Amino acid sequence: MIKGFRCCCGDSVPFSACLERARSHPDDCPFVYPILQGMVNGIRGEVEGISVTSLLTCLRKVVLEKRHDVYVDPKQLFYAFRGQMFHAIAALAQPDGCVVEQRFSRPIAGLTISGQPDLIWPQHRLLIDFKTTRRVPQKDAYPHHALQVNIYRWLVEPLYPVDRLEIVYMDMDGAKRLPVPVLERRKVTAVLVARARVLAAALNGGSLPPRVGPDGLWQCPWCSFQDRCWPRGIPTPEDLRKQTEAKVRAIKRARTLAQEGA
Image (cartoon, one colour):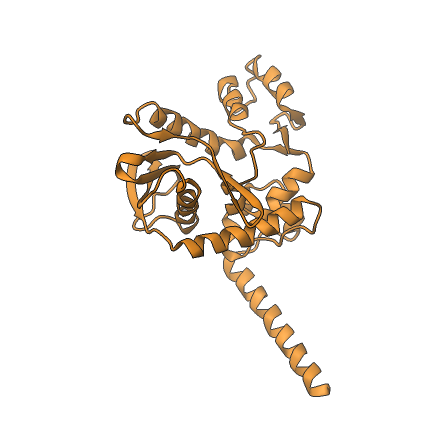
């Protein structure tokens, strides 16, 4: 669980100690007190069931953060803080009848999944999610974001039928609306069940989930456990693909040799 900051003074300290130091406005701190306090306020506590966010991030990281106290560099929380500012402004300016940042939960395969869509517009049977990003996609929404809003659609459909999905990407230059294709329900639930079972088993004391694959390596530079997972350094996606392919070839060759020797 996230307990505090890896402070610029060189120590890992609880949030309260870091904030107390920040009140004196020290010259060596790159962040002022209001920003640090905003980051701390933005850390969400325990939620019911397995959250959609947890399912779509690195499952190994989720479990490690539950098992160990974590102290993070403030830079790791700044991007989330920036996103929360955009969300707070958008939440104050929604049309009447919209459902804004309400938490929903729904059972599946003996598990409870919960999540908090940014905006549901029942009049238009529309669900919108806001994303702040360094780089707005040129054409299509990022795949993990598209999957996220499809899971939100599944999550809210008992109360709010949704036919349209959109993601509004925002960076420092502006905003861009992108429609997201609606996935077949069976594909969404298959992903939900598979990942939720792995996460639930690990959180109940089972083995750690595997490390992320090539498409998930983008998360690793911001992770507090990167040295544990990648002691020789984070590989490139291409290097990791080559390593995986080599392991698969070795396993196939061993099986072939075993069958020939039987």
